[in-house]
Amino acid sequence: MTRSAAPLRQQLLDAALCLFSQRGFRGTSLQDIAREVGCSKASLLYHFASKEAILVELLAPSTAGMTELTDRLRDEPADRVAARAVEGLVDLVLRFRREIQLLLAEVADVSAARGSGGGTQEPEPILSCLAGRSTEPQARLRAWMALGAITLGAAGATDQPTELVRRELAAGARRVLNLT
Amino acid sequence: MTRSAAPLRQQLLDAALCLFSQRGFRGTSLQDIAREVGCSKASLLYHFASKEAILVELLAPSTAGMTELTDRLRDEPADRVAARAVEGLVDLVLRFRREIQLLLAEVADVSAARGSGGGTQEPEPILSCLAGRSTEPQARLRAWMALGAITLGAAGATDQPTELVRRELAAGARRVLNLT
DNA sequence: GACAGTCCTGACCGATCGGCCAGTTAGTCT
DNA sequence: AGACTAACTGGCCGATCGGTCAGGACTGTC
Image (cartoon, rainbow over all chains, first blue to last red; front, side, top):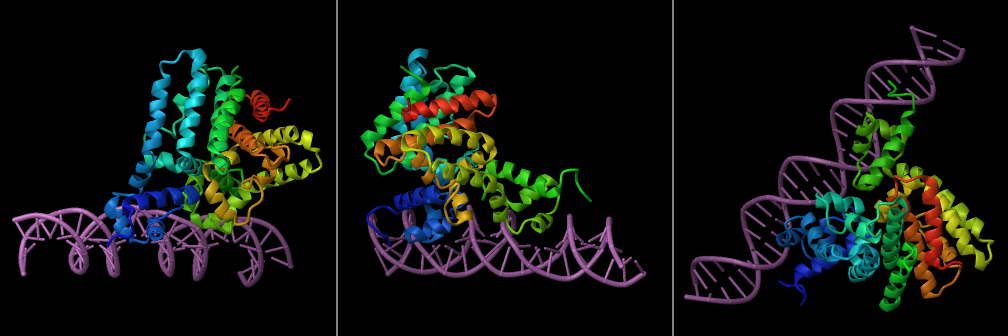
């Protein structure tokens, strides 16, 4: 009755992540995911309570990672917080490249599926850190730009060695923020 | 029978752009759009051949703008093309802020609705220009980052004066690209 | 008034969707 | 062998979707 060595549940999660990234959450049906894995839709729903439960589970690690990062940054002094935020964010983005692609594909749907804010799709705490806790318009705008540079940089350059990407993301983001 | 002075067709386009940006293309139904404007879905379909036709029409100006930009950049020498690309892209992104938000919300669905590539959602020509026509991994990565910085910067900082945003987007993107 | 064109509508259609349900299968334990 | 459970399935359900259609209201022209 089992399809392969890897547990079906994990296969479903992998397929869902891939399809959600390509087609979006709403653009991917449960039948699409089930077909990809080679099981029935009802079998998929045996393992997951709902379509949304799949998404929540997929995003849980990256969400937890972002929460942990912003918690860690809480104790950083204002003159160091932006640089630390860049490092932490680059790490996170590289660890969760596929999820970032999903997020880029589905910003609106992710919020809908998640209801309340917080975590990866609510960038306010990380933006504040990137801005060095400044509320100046210029600092805020640069924070957005740094976030965009890191996320799209990581998402776009999928075929490059990780260490190069890591170094460039960090350095480029620091230049955006005009950190010495 | 008319709802207001503005032609219904324009109202439908405005409502669609707004809703598509918030909920995504697939996350927005024709009934949603019609309800927003206060007419029937069938009336909407009197004016537009299909849901996709609405999207295509919404994106036509920005698509044309991007095509025009990349055409213009074709004759720029390699040592100036990146800086010119930044300028042009910043202009474009500021002109089409709402559409950019739609694109960020719906990268996958936009491709599906558009079929063939080209235009705003296929960034290859602009990326090459941002990279100064270099195919080095570092240059490519920086081009992605510049694109991310400009687009997310513009999308995130929606409450700031345009001239500040313009200046910062251009300057920040140049720093990302390490342009002197 | 008759006619044609534009605009709009309620009702309808087939397809797809997320999710439910009763039944089947295979494995484990007594 | 029988009981139990986890895993899986085909068929079904109600809701929603994009789109169609026949008909009505309105306007302008002859």
